[in-house]
Length: 405
Ligand SMILES: Cc1ncc(COP(=O)(O)O)c(C=O)c1O
Image 1 (cartoon, rainbow, N blue to C red):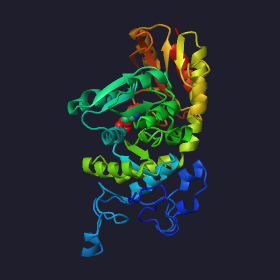
Image 2: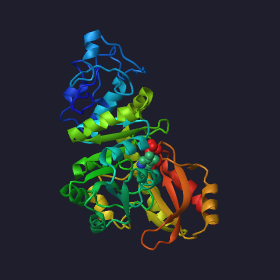
Image 3: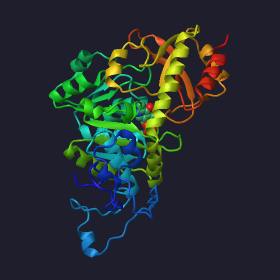
Image 4: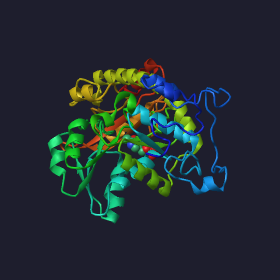
């Protein structure tokens, strides 16, 4: 890998005192706080400035001629490389135990770039049935125009995924947990089965973040993130990230992403760095608040089921305990009264929770709609909650009053 956004590389602007050098054995929180910082390079500023710039000057004509040669640290144009983004990429690669990372203008930018790098015309893809809806649409509507075929597999049985593999399967696309029923297809055996057949595995790790789950260590090849969610953490930035280990794939992705141009604005990269500095403490509190709310709902007489992998009642709870180091705070539940009217009534009574999509920020959110249950093909009214960082008693009080008869 020649680009400087490798985990062990030094981003331009980082002088000899880059904190990354001293952090080979550092823990997760220390990496989040300091990795790839240039401690003395910016007047000692503890927060690096933003390189809010489109183009970079060359020292001379010879330097211009050498541009983009392997090992060339020169930044040329922000669509290709930018020091603010490169420092973020170095940190993300390290956090996900990858060799390189590439950031994007949105999670979908990262997801489509990752998929594009793994398929060609005639290729077949196996994908988890309840993946993020636009990912499903990209595979089943957009890529079919270019001769790519896809099989969606519902549920969590590894045999069903393996049975879906075909001679032309090039890609296994996973989310675990999924963001409807929060089912957990087992990442490790599935990635191993794919690897045996020369199939690349992409894993969307937006829900767990590297703090709770590291898919590359489970055998997956590429990790994608909607960094808009917990990594950003403050609902003020839309961005994506893609992390991997394979050098050849990394080179291809860098070249392709420069071509397709969904690179983030440097300010977005700077905001993500700010989010990462507090990722571990935020995730701990999200976990704590999320579990408290899930337990409250599970006990409530008007609630039929809570879909949260941290509850003992979750069908893959034992797997969740092995695969995850902890639980994020996005989950869903079913009211006993399975009607539009009951769902809308509950949502409209909420005072502290906002009705809104997305998740991972400081604020609690709720949305409701129908989803097909995978086993019975029965349509279910599901309410999805994102539990934010507010006082948990206030959140529970809000839910309690919204559930009143
Ligand atoms: C699981 C998951 N993956 C990916 C995305 C896409 O991310 P973005 O909205 O940043 O493009 C989302 C967005 O909601 C998501 O929920």
